[in-house]
Length: 143
Image (cartoon, rainbow, N blue to C red; front, side, top):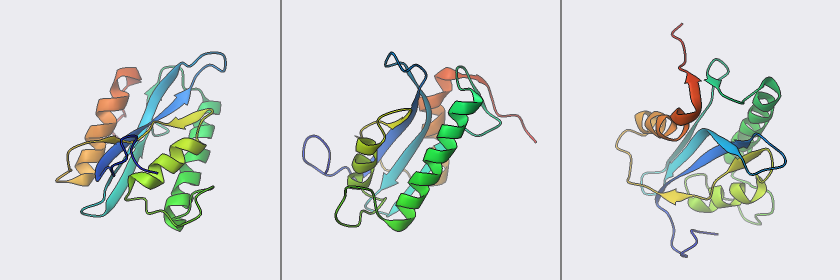
């Protein structure tokens, strides 16, 4: 499982979304995952409990937390359901497999290519801001 074109995405990302309505396809982005194959790294940034998002209620936050924990387990075990072989979370194969499983309340878009990140930890925050900012109503407050 690679990109739709058949080539591997060496530097990629996917947007994490939640469905706000069972009867429509209305979703809002609540995070992002990124990876690099050439300099093996992966990471994600999800909406945190103290960050507000229009339409994301406590029940939805619970689904987000459960999904985040499940993806963390899959990445740590290098195993995604229905994949016969181990999958490295530093590859698009892993995130394609995850996107095929997450098709209901919490979804993962198909992977997309991007430029390599010089500083992945800073880059994942920039990705989060770019994909999630539009729906946010209140920025995270300083502690």
